[in-house]
Amino acid sequence: MESLQRTHNRGSISTGYDIENSLKVERTNTEYLHRNVSTAGNAKVWCASMWIKRTELDGSQQFWQFLSSMTSNGSGGYSGWPTRIGFWYSTDGLWVDSRHGTGNARLTSLVFQRDTSAWYHIVVMQDTTQSTDTNRTKIYINGTLLLPADLDYDQYPAQNADTAMHVLNSRVAVGAQADGGYPWSGYIADVHLLDGQTGKTPSDFAEYDEDSGIWKPKAYTGAYGTNGFHLKFEDSSNMGLDSSGNGNNLTSNNIAAADQATDTPTNNFSTLNPLIEQGLIPARYTVSEGGTKQISTADGYGCSVGTIGVSKGKWYFEAQFNSDGSGKHFGVIDEASFTTGTAFVDGISPGQQAYGVSIFKNGGINIDGSYVPSYSFSSFTTETLGCAMDLDNNKLYFSRSGTYGNSGDPTSGATGTGAIPLSTAGGGTWFISTGCYTGHAQTNQGGYTSYTISSAASDANGYGTFEYAPPSGYYALCTKNLEEFG
Image (cartoon, rainbow, N blue to C red; front, side):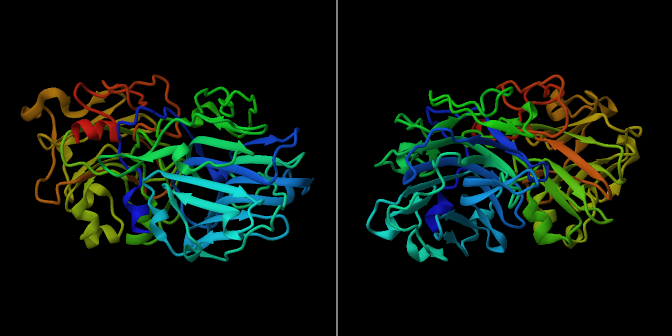
């Protein structure tokens, strides 16, 4: 499975086919799209293609489901034959359960799917007319077919069995599971469902980049069949809009216009990395809302860290603290502090690390482990905080409601008017970092945020959605900008 790791879509590639939007799904909010099938399609042959980016890893999660012979479970959900695609408990293996009586194929111990910085292309093809059982369900990740040797609990539907896919009165759901079990959190983009279309391969939806070898999206040009659809998530007022031409629109369940994101396989944004918390410090917080929100689960500082580090260029991001809890902090941290520093394991704030800077809710600023009152703000509550990081000159600037502290001027370059110095003694790669002692903190790294944005300002390249415009020469932390400036 080395090839699967190598072809992860973490970067921006010139594809000729840009995916503009994705749908952010949060499992605790029971967010999903659904459609009841009113016209029977081909229940034996179907293909599902989608790009996903994970943001939470614990427990079983599924991002695609079909239910047929539906009956109400009395709790607002449905029960019936399931066809479902997701991730399986602690193994985090891709789980495909397509049954009419029996049938389950599950990827087990390959943990590359725990990479929350990458987009994955998932294609599942089913054709129960095939005489060879292993040909009846085919699973591809980033263009690579999973072989029987890669699968555990390796079972297949009976020949010519009807699956739940297009049986009359079946129900299709994208996002958290429609019957209330195994909900999922993450981003999903460029979703295709093909009904009864044979001879399809993953190369109908994506291809290898000839220079980098990365698996990248391309436009699908084939037919969709009776119940097929294409979800581009391009209309924030109608996130279930079918762009295939079939008019098979899906209905939203707890999906809002704000759940439209610009974090996509062709422009990947930084989010908070749940693996940092899981691997390096005691369990003090969880990450939610598309990897933008940190929620304290136990008293004690916990540093959340972004998924994209940078060592040059000028970058801008924002955060917002609510009135709940205490010890809120927002800033940046050098990789040396959380790859080798024992202090980080103990869970203190970014500015209390050997190489880090953070502003606290009370207005205080810590730099490389020391409190520096000359840079401090007065205390604040729910204002939007901005951070402009100039790695070409090793300077940092904090703003509050659009005004930079210490009369700072992020465009002053090497002069560093009002700037906070960034240490050059660490590893040299810097990440956004935030957290709280109790309560929660919210970040906005440009691709999505859970708090309300009123002005929708972007950088000079048109990327990111911020409350305040990034200073001239500063950019959102996304792969299209990294390709140019990182």
